[in-house]
Image 1 (cartoon, one colour):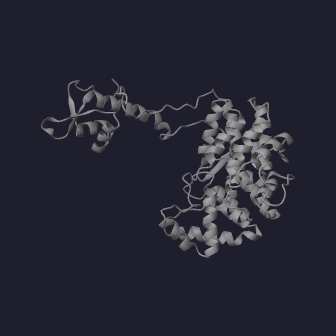
Image 2: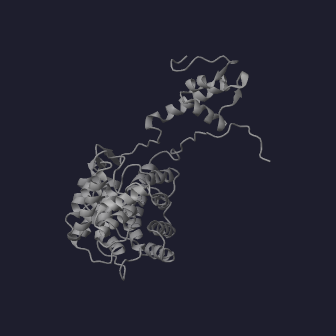
Image 3: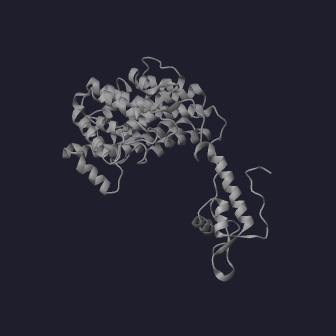
Length: 418
């Protein structure tokens, strides 16, 4: 008998609530929660005081709990996936072993994307969208209501572009790379222009700028946008990236995998977070003081957006790097001062550092972009990382990402409802 397995209980013995709780390693209240879920049955004790429990049932539940705990102990209860793309460690992060901040500082977004996909930066790389894909994607996007969110536009553009690609089901590495290099510029080209007309020349950052701001960009602002795209290209197994890998594991084509990521990124705790930070920053700029704005956030029971990150006990390296680029922008000083005021004011309550959402908010607010611009930047940028993860997953055994459910419902058989 294994030393961690208890000896079998007397089959006739019934346990008190306290004995059952001790065997299960839980509080007495949890024992009754198991009863209410149908996982244990109880009987009134002799004399009507308290309950007793079948020893065999309690032992079986204890074994299941130990087995479930052992299955998840290697990953803290989370799904673990081997990957060679991004490492996050000691308040830094790395793309294929190279410091991601250094990559974003020295290379364009397109070159960083190539590094994620191939391990080569391909200096001077530009992405070109096929005319047929752009045409069908634009028609689909232009048909959406005016109030459609950025991820709605990008998701529809992705699906439309897929229909224009008869080779989308080819999952060979070369074919997927070809898809990646055309899908990202197609997504940007499909977005409506912020000004009078779409401009589709220059770097991807320049083309995206035309969709986010009616102003003409200065070089410092354009470089900051390009750096933001490069810095956000991947961040290990974020929720949207996990969705992409699940889709790729089922051998969904790259367009479908990217669409899965876009479906998750729309959540307020993921890609949309920068919009909340933008609105907070704008309120501080309007009022000239962060204190009343933060007081209103806390009074409403909301967390302060743009602060803290669970993967970085110290500074978010993406925010630190992007702030460096923002400090070179002539128009960014008011928003930078407002962001510093937010951090300093919040530090009286909790010492949290600015995260990349606040840095994105400074960029979008300084460049005349709408609150949703950060979400667009995030989604376009992260598409590169999603493709990298899809490529990696296509090289693995199909359908390997199929976690087992831990059933917690009533024990069968249950009577049919009348």
